[in-house]
Length: 310
Ligand SMILES: Cc1ncc(COP(=O)(O)O)c(C=O)c1O
Image (spheres, rainbow, N blue to C red):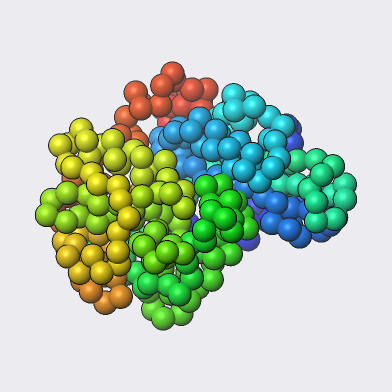
């Protein structure tokens, strides 16, 4: 993993319909999105040169923007095409894609009316969030004092930049106390999610996951629920009281970047990385490396496959 700053790298970024040199992909300081949080984004994962669930992510970028009251000026097929071309150009095999859309600079009143919408897509090599040891042995979580807000307070189903203030505060507080990540409750006090991933508990061999009524129902969450069905593991989506953590045998997180990430302790209570977590993590890894899971063979995979044979 590189530690280069994100505004000083080689390569191209797709910006408003064209590829521009990485360092030139800039926005003006007087952008509405920067001042008032009018931005939405996606996080996508590249495996073997292909973006897993690309169209689902492009669709979610659109629906997030709709929730914030603006329209992405490129349709889902155009976003998919631009992403595939970018990944192919940069010859990324194991990486991450970050599409982002934001309101522009036509005016700086609080109203978003009259602002243009800009879209950028960047991609880079980035195989894993956590170390191999953390992926195998699990990470530690601390319950945060920050909570997921009510749908009357915030656009909770949008992957909106403004909502990530909560995640950044929670994550940094957890890290300052020596934990890997934070566990957030929702405004009612139910278990919600981590700062970039959904939560699953294993109780008596069945999966229990918080009902995603006030936070993102992640694409990985939905994939893992489908995998559990295939493996004959019962899944219960419901409101879960934090006290139920005491009865869980295993805990894990799911997310595009986290994948299926075991948790080895929450607030100091230890959990084993057990058979259910392991079987779902293995099934997820198998799936993301299965070409058939990506539909038609993409230009991306063709370009990377060629480069791989040299
Ligand atoms: C706050 C939050 N919850 C959940 C998720 C998991 O979503 P997905 O599986 O679609 O990546 C993410 C990551 O995008 C996230 O940032």
